Image (cartoon, rainbow, N blue to C red; front, top):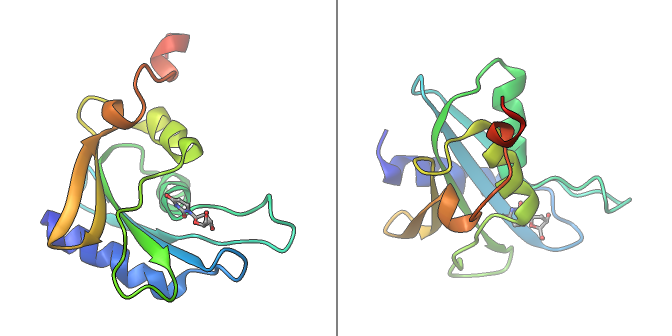
Length: 138
Ligand code: THU
């Protein structure tokens, strides 16, 4: 699967986003080490705090299906009325969830405006000196 195809899969999830409060739709597509893609969208809540980001939806779908090794994730999103999407970067909570299951030096995060316009970061770049399982000796 190419970077562009993964970004396209993330973009396809924008229509599933449930964002009646922020009006900011996000889609994510997570590539597992077995080549399988796990997708996600943000899901907001009238009680606000239960809101979950697209990236964590994708991770929790994958982990709950038994997958724990990942290569990269594509993230795309913006206001639902936007003509051109900005580059959306994962929130701190999602970066911490990535830290649980991914090697920060090799796991890549594609923050995409479109399949042609995206920035690639390692998790270590977005979460420097992150705390993860290795700190606990796991
Ligand atoms: N959001 C994501 O789904 N992923 C991000 O990377 C940033 C923020 C969601 C959460 C909320 O539903 C909306 O975007 C506005 O913060």
